[in-house]
Structure formats: C-alpha cells, structure tokens
Length: 269
Image (cartoon, rainbow, N blue to C red):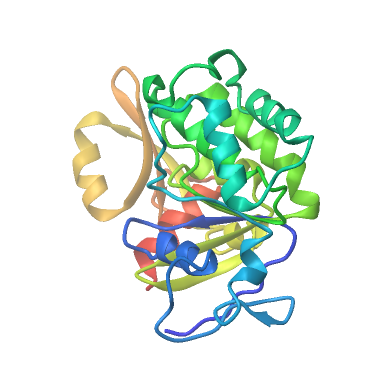
C-alpha cells in the first residue's frame, strides 16, 4: 500500500506493533537504509539522491544504539562531535549543558561501560542533540528510563519542538500521548492513520465502554469483546472495553489515544 506523509515542525508520535515498519521508516529518513521505491524530500530536495542535505541538520537515536565502553561521557560526546563536524570553543560548554539536560553530570567522568541501560540511553539522547539539529529522530528513546527520566526527556524535547521536526517512536503510548502534536499509526508496513491526537481518537469515540462484571464472567466476556483494561475488586471486576455496540449494563467512556491505537491496529491493515 502506497502512502504519503507530510511532516512539519513539532512532534510526530509514531505508534505501531512490532514489525509495523517504524524502525525501517526511521532508518530510511535518516539515510541509513534505502527504500525499494518512493522518494523523501526535505524542503524540495530529494535526500535519497543528496543525503548530506539532511545529515548535517539531523540528530538520530537508533533503537540499537551502541557506545564505546572505555570512554567517559565527555570523551564519547567529543568524539561524536568530531565525527559530526561539530567543534569550536563552545563545544565543552555545549557538552556540559547536554549532560546536565539528561541528568548525567555526576557520572560524566565514569567509563560508559559502567553505566546502566537507562544511563546509556540518556547518553544516546545527548549525542543526538550535539549538532543543534533541526530534524530529530528518536527510535524507542524511553526504553530503560524510569518514570522521572521519561519526564525529563519529554520536557527536553518539548522545548525543542517549536523550531524542530521531531519524529518519536515508542511502545509506551503515554509518552506519545503526553507530548505529540500529531500521531501516525502503522501496521505491517502500511499507514493506518495520521492526524492530531483529537482526530485519531475521534475514530474510536462512541466505541469505548466500561462495565462491572462478576469475576466468574470475565473469561467469557474477554472471548467476545476487545478488553483494554481490568481492575479487580472484592467480588467484581471493572472492565474497559471496545465494541461497536454497547453491552447491557455498560456505560460509554471517554476515548483515549491507547483505545484508538488498539482499535485501529486490531481492525485495520
């Protein structure tokens, strides 16, 4: 299935199950992989023919980001800066500001090989920001981050979004829900929908319900309906579910982005 997407300044949240093609799309935009067909243009320039046009203004954090274990954070970022052609008398100051932004100042002189998975992810975020990019691509950037670190990351990129294109892929719908200006949902290499969060959520409005059931009835209910969430109480269980029609005893609930994501990926593509 062919599709066309236009991305402007702001944050585009990219959602989709494993194998949807999110990482492949990001690698193609970052000029790491070549598409079999199609074109990608930036300000009218074909970046598949002229990849340097985007690379000089690009920051990219791949899902399988690797580090040099023997280098400390300062050495690693200065090495990446040299590879990107970033230098000058203010480089050290920029490195320090980025380390502070990702909360690694206290660990900056330790070998990266001693870092936890979340700390390595944060150094990956810092390297993506080194060249003051105008296009940022983050593939699963919050993997390994605790809730406080995820909040710090969201605040960091929200501040950049006004003058920057940010494409953010995540399996954590709440991360997308919190900061994305627009959302694109993919499945099996196809684009299911793209729009503002309100536009995407509208597609499932009137299809989300809540009901209280006896515990013994839950298994049979799950077999007949798309259950989004459950909360067990003493003798009953609260169930949030998606259905084309209400069930006797249920009440309509306010639809959320997660509801739209589950509905679209189960019923389209």
